[in-house]
Image (cartoon, rainbow, N blue to C red):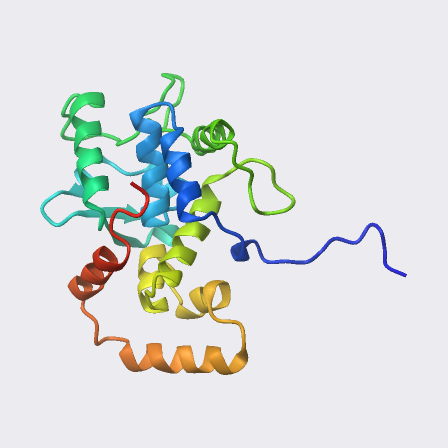
Length: 225
């Protein structure tokens, strides 16, 4: 007999939104600020705290890079490979932030917030509200609302489905270890994992950052609008 109280064991990384669902999420965001939050989460696979801490001076529109302050105080450069994302971000800074040259990209909503930037809880609410307006439900069985982390999973899955290597996925997500990327988003069978790992190790170090950026732009581009 099966235990009625037992829960199905699964990995949350196996669930993700489709490209169209993410476009609907962006479409149903209330403000330009909210659209930018969702787009950056989806295109760059950012964690909430990474997004919250972005400063205007971290953004280089000459190279289309954003300096991200990640886990364990390790920094990386996120590539804005979508032309539309770049243009939207410029408009946001110009019209919402009044062409500010420094300060947080998403400033605190309340003066009581001593950190000076938007909180992770506020990011949760923005994403969840857009999901409700778009009538989307979180594909993870035990969750109801769309949350920021499902956008990170979706970013990885969509990159992989569009033919990007796990090496590129690792760089986009900022995983310190290739094994982490493989464990979360690798192929299913042992033989496929061995082949994928061997292929990636053979290629590792042969692709330059610019080559990976070109691959991202070519294979993904403006997929989320």
